[in-house]
Image (cartoon, rainbow, N blue to C red; front, side, top):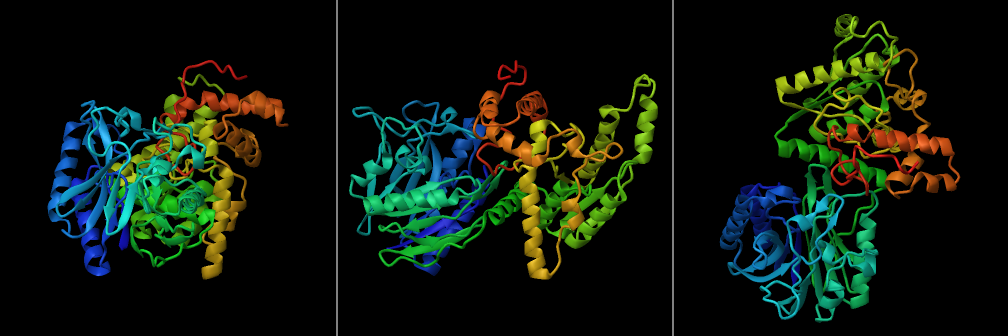
Length: 564
């Protein structure tokens, strides 16, 4: 039997577009690959994650309407598996995350997701109920765990989290059915299909592959993982769908970060092996896709940013050019009285290397005018952060003016270390629609830029990011001789402590016991807590870690810092 994995990039709520994409892939698989079964990702018909759109009756209605249309126009003799939502017959006010197989213009098999995630960005319990129904209940078809037979194979479907049981991942959020994979294996399945929408996080692909391999070898079955690709808001889906044979060997692997159609012949499988990439290459691909899809799905063709001569804006400019093309990127250098000649020269050199448009807009006259207007109300007090931040806010004003005039999307260049410490200016350098590197610590930014230069030097004999940008001491250049380390600890020290706080939920006493300087830990923690209100007002970041700032991190703003 020839099974085709259709790794697609749907747009949330674009039912006609998603329907057309599914039809195009299905007919291609049928006509060109002679497929017997084609499998699409979780919620492929409506896009993922739809969020509060699920509370709109029209959204659910359009989803079912598109499903019925697909049933009519899909190839009659090609079994097609795809994900969609449907109203629960049990509760009425909640939905079921469904996966159906269409054949001969009708749904011949349906499975509902059992494990409903309620963590990070995925508050799915708000919308979906579990597809597990206790014995003796008025359970609709598709509840529980079922098997369908097709061309001599017994096939089970475990939707995303249903496959990653605590036996394999250490998760403890199992529903009443204790192990969906084991239960399906007990029904003598030969193939386990895992339709999913798994967001990219650095270095997690190998973990998925390892779990699938373990399932395959333990139960002597083929595992087919169908993952979504593309980006929606903060989430980037890396694709990299795969299949593992009963020995646990990976026999086919789809591309990373792009749509793909790959197939495996059973039992003679093995058409494409996985391409090897390093973690920084993966990270770069994820960020580029995140920018590209955000622009496309939000209706932007052009983007712009401030190019300060620092490493953060240099990386964002590089990513923007890769995502949108140099002809669609404008970089603005906005020097003030404190801007160094080196920063201006470095910015111009970088823009030239990238081939994008570069504009210089001096802000000194506007800055002087603002200081003059505020002179009396500032009561002759000494120069401090008020005067520093005025410069950043003037730049933000001009960036947004350009955004309005040319319908161009503004990118902000703040990194995770700065966001953690509130080392940013609201309504200034935080202005923008998207923060591409807001989930990268400063040390990651530096490493990624070094990797980009190594690759470009090897390929073209030239470093694309000027070496001076990488080597110079980071500075906002908002006062004379300023550096970031005037206000922050060294980034290599800061980032390690921030990782303990953010990723491991370590308290200050716990971190101090690990040998870190007590006063430094308290200072970092206090500053981070008191900066939470800033983070609530900054653009969304592209999620590339297990714990980004944003929707998945719910910390009160007004609270006592009991930890210290």
